[in-house]
Length: 201
Image (cartoon, rainbow, N blue to C red; front, side):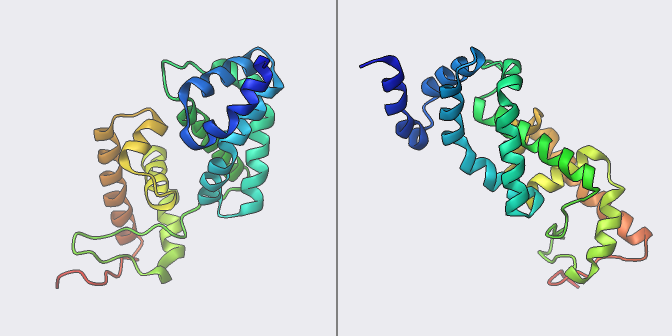
C-alpha cells in the first residue's frame, strides 16, 4: 500500500481525532506544494471554520465564501506556519478570523447585534438599544472590541480567546472587563444608560 493510499485512509481518523501527527504531515505536504495535503486539511477543518466564520459574520453564504477564500490562499500562506508557536487548528482559525474581520471592515460592518453587557446582578442591556450600543461599540479600542466580539458573539472561552489572539488569559480577562466598563460608560455619556433587568434595586 503506497503512501498516498495510507494518507487517504487516515483522513477519517483525522476528522474524528484531530491527530496532530497526521495534521502536521498534511501541513508539511502542503508546504511542499502537494494538493492532496491541502485536501486533507480542507476535509479536517472546513466545517469548523464555516461555523466559526458564520458566528462572526452572521451569514452562512458569506461564511462559505470566506472559508473558500482562506483555503484557496492557504497554499501560499501556510509557509508562515510554525508548529512550535501554536497548534495548526488555532493558527488556521486566526487566519480565518483575520479574513472575516477584513471582510467586515471592507463592508464597514460591526457584528454586535447579539452582544449583551451584563451587570453583576445578572441583568442585561435592553435589546431595544441596539443602535446606541452599536455607536458606543464603534468607539471602543480595537483590542477591547475584539475580545468582546470573540467572547459574546463568537462564544469563545477566555482560554480560547487567549490562544486565538496570542495573549495571556489574564490580559484577556482585563480587556474583557475594561471593554464592558468602557462600553457602559460610553452609553451613559450618550444619554443611553443601559436598562438593566434583574439588577438589584
